Length: 435
Ligand SMILES: NC(=O)c1ccc[n+]([C@@H]2O[C@H](COP(=O)([O-])OP(=O)(O)OC[C@H]3O[C@@H](n4cnc5c(N)ncnc54)[C@H](O)[C@@H]3O)[C@@H](O)[C@H]2O)c1
Figure 1 (cartoon, protein in one colour):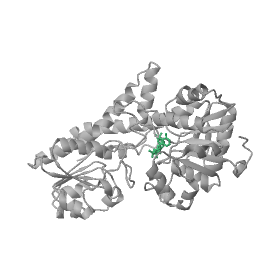
Figure 2: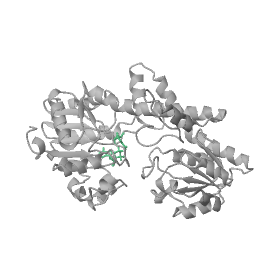
Figure 3: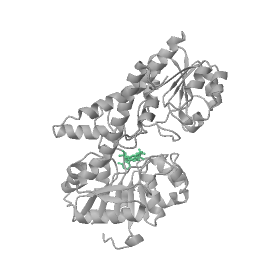
Figure 4: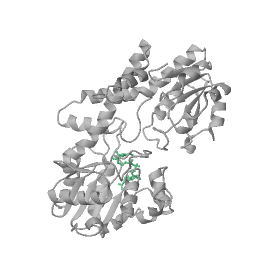
């Protein structure tokens, strides 16, 4: 491909996007918005139908605002259109299995699809989160097995996506990027493309491995810091110290401290998953990431810890967990979105089921998984509540409403409710690291 066409020199270039999820769909819309001819490909027929009907398959303001471009994504489950693309961007999932081992099947399948539907000189960009070495040792290897050489038959680059679904300030248009490629030409082509769609700095890295490593480092950094405050919450709880207040106090130091807050565990497709990619990759090279493994263990323990707090609160008022109606308030892993992936609510519900509690699920963003139609009915049905997600609808609840609905105990998994007021109303309250 000669990068001399079109928008900033690329207008006539076309872009194929493999995987139209939280990462791929906003990117596809952005490319279409910037005038690229887009070919969206996904294996999920239902998702394709929804996009073709002009709707978003999930709730995301960025997509709602660009609905008119959904038809320009040319969403299809037939990969043959990828042949027409000058640039193919891979946005497929990179999850872990039940033993936390990276699952590369979607990435391998996408690579095979590209090889089968390629055109000479195509630029392939991986946006999925991967560990250092995947581009060279796995993807480029597949190409070379097919007799294709990087820098001649195709170009390979990696530009990890940092999108934060539901974030109103930061999106695919303005989040700075890091970029790595196997060859100088591939790097130059990819940089030109991203500069044409993103209004933020693009940092070229010294190698494709460095770009791969950036993303797992960013998310591991977050996981470790959250694990630290979660551990503090458990320890401070025993000492009767309010962890949230302490963190806010420490955060008044204007340098060398970054506030992270404890909670009922981490969720989503990134934080609870990506560190395992680094752990496993390092293991292959003979290095044991002890700190990362410990952080993962601490954060994985938080949903059970949250249920244990509920158990203690109920014991304190002479109620057994068995048969008590416990409301799970919020199911998604973070506020104001409908993403359930790796959400702590899943483990919390499993734990409550083991203890034979009566469970009432409610999430205004995930009606299909809710046991009740609305918040009013939810409050009426519960004896006690575990707040899992700090959705704006829950922050607006008047504490008196809990009292009126005879809620006896609340575990505030996000430390976002007015605990003092709830306690004054005679409700048993306990946050994570605060009483
Ligand atoms: N969700 C986030 O917040 C986020 C942020 C940054 C990076 N990432 C990374 O981006 C990647 C994608 O994440 P996502 O959240 O968009 O996932 P997603 O599950 O929302 O979307 C992935 C899409 O890929 C499709 N797919 C799977 N295998 C395919 C194949 N072989 N061919 C075509 N389509 C296929 C799925 O049907 C799905 O629609 C992951 O590596 C993730 O770690 C995610």
